[in-house]
Length: 506
Image (cartoon, rainbow, N blue to C red; front, side):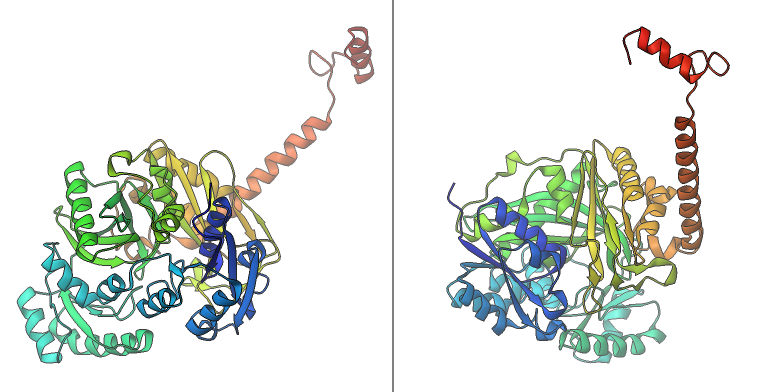
């Protein structure tokens, strides 16, 4: 089969760069890596067929350098660029420059990114398309007086959010009028620092919601499809930690309505490629549009495991002008999948990042266990980037089976030399509310330090390892003792050897 492109440049690093490189190799495409000086020995550099240094360690001087990445792409003869997620993945200006340079952009159309990349314009587009949104302003706040008026109209608590925001930055929950002024100042300041855009808006706060997102896929041939939903409610400070599919509490009726709305949202912005429409699911069963991520999501592997679709393969095919390699009727949810994000951080110390040298790595195996990662023994985890090392993903015939498989896989996963959040995830998989599916976006804050204790969990893991080691040594000692048939006292080992020889078994 002729590959859709001869060479593809991956404008990213870490596990997502490795993920895209693997897809390219499977399709017969030459993968080209870029790297900063801090990533010279990284796994994505080792796995690519060609690799080019694009600057110093800080991302602003390397992975965010549009000019340098385009220069390398032209020099290497790349026919397309895959941005992964993060960095320039949702940058409409960069996507436009790629297309202007005569290369294919393996991502969303720049126009769709512009509309959906701004939270206010996204809300406006979704309202026009008949998509339910959380009550609030449809324009950036003009002044604090407007915020006071709107908050009083929709009722407290409210959320202050950055128009250009994401990842929880520029976001504040306000419980009462006396907190509003300081929240507005803090949100504007953080938004300006994080995004260079201090515009903010206000919306109603939905108490104890679940964060449920729908994976959509559009092909530019008029097909806007969905690959069902993912529950991403296990979060800390708006950062996802555990994702699963299907959502444990979603009814068939709500699933049908939510996926229909998601494809309508994609059609409204003439979407193409892989994307995610995110919703807040209220306790009463109503759901509201939250935002659209115009890229491949970190948690896409769990969708792949329950649908059997390779989303990166499909992305590449559609970028080459082909129709989607599947129809809606061919898609179904099979079994249950869970993903946890393995990070170089210390959960017992407020999840502080823990860069440093990894001494060794032991990966879990067995049926339906997948590790998308970029770590290896001897790898020096840099301080300059997100601390995620890998994603551990499992599939089971149902949710209890998937949880059991995840517990087993986590117990096999060993990363020595640095601290990771593996012990934290072991606790979550054993935690009653999670096992019962009784959680929402406030799950971590509500339980951490109470019935979800990091110190106790660490001690429990040490005790478990010690017990396993003692059992192993006891078994070794027992195996070294040679006892005759019939048990102790039935004869010496020499007598037993003679019997075996006479029976022709020596």
